Length: 331
Image (cartoon, rainbow, N blue to C red; front, side, top):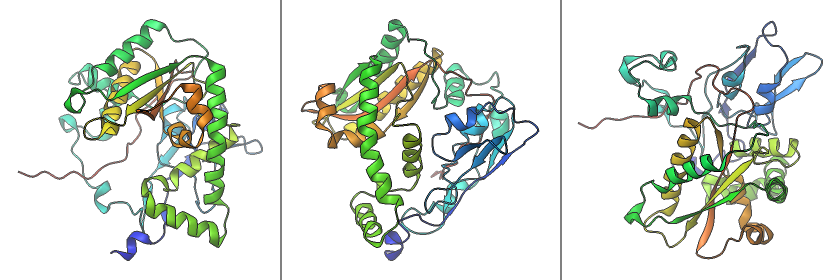
């Protein structure tokens, strides 16, 4: 078991979803390709349809988010199955896809019909999806203040509220931060993807030091950033950076996560769309110029960024499967 933890770190053996496109239904809008969070879907001009692609040692650069299904207005694409690592450090829990109990004894596909039994909070939770295509419409200051206020009312350990909000509505600043952070991502992606014994060894060592940062899935998203020319925040009109106070009681990162969820859910309830972004906080420690640009100083550290704006397309055309989690009841 101990040896298993250190095996198959680099491109571990994985079962990916099967992506099927119905050419008779596909109208060539390319929404699925443009909103895919990874490099998985590419548009094939010859075939006139989206085509699933690989990346390095990944036979399919897919994270099984089923975004392509949710955004397709023609119901022309389906992702069947789940992302499942079979061996090694990142092996998926065998109980992950067992039976689950759905509210009101409804099956998963019926849940999205939003029964009258569901309250308004549940409806927002079930309909929310990460948005990566934003319109140019600016977000009203009133709505920004409302979602920040929702964040302020989040619980925190000892009620110490160990966070600070930086709200950036200047597109040039957001673009500059994107480009600078993307250069760090390119280096990480190339370290992982370009095959050599030395680089593979480095990835093994780094995964031992910080296992949460060397899963193969973010690599596919880094490739998408490169394909977009360095765009990370999706040209959203508003980017909210949440800084944690490193002196916070207990685990301030958990407090930041709760704040972010409050902001995201309140934003969607107001007709906005959001996408939580981890790439910028991951890159900023290596970029003093970005820290200076955002005015980040001790005791604060950038923990999370959220792109906010009005969705350019509808993101909830249909209910799609969400990855299941193990549940155990102890009575």
